[in-house]
Length: 218
Image: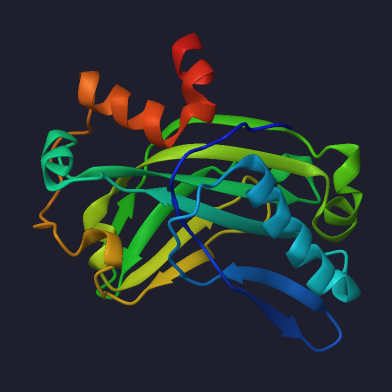
């Protein structure tokens, strides 16, 4: 699967595995780490390759998920998008039946849940050049774009995913409640209705051009 240049993002960083004695790695988790580097397909694939290299001794690992958040670039755009940004979650799994994800949601420290509606997704097989990734995490990959209420980024809690078959409540990220650097100038509030129209289209074309053709085909 080839996803072209995806513009400026805020990228997830370090990978933390859960290792159970005699059972290998059962959960590869992404810890928050912010960067303004463009998130190209090459960079996302490099992250998967680095994780595969680091954890190949535990292969096969059932699944891995990494994410990228695109935030509004200005307070004015934040208001035009009704308090939303967007997030792409890239998942690789051994079993194709597990994909795409059935649910992506945020559970706050108080237990309240917010479901993130999917905008569009694309699933396929890893390229032959990514054989080390396939050997570690599987050859099945899905990239899905979701609406992302920006309020989540400053709320303590967990970003969770439900896979289609075997895994529920897979933690993708744990938010501390601290304000990310990209949002320090914003007055964060409860989001309103999901964004649409020209402001949303411009935002997606700038931050997520890889999905433009998928969105126009819907």
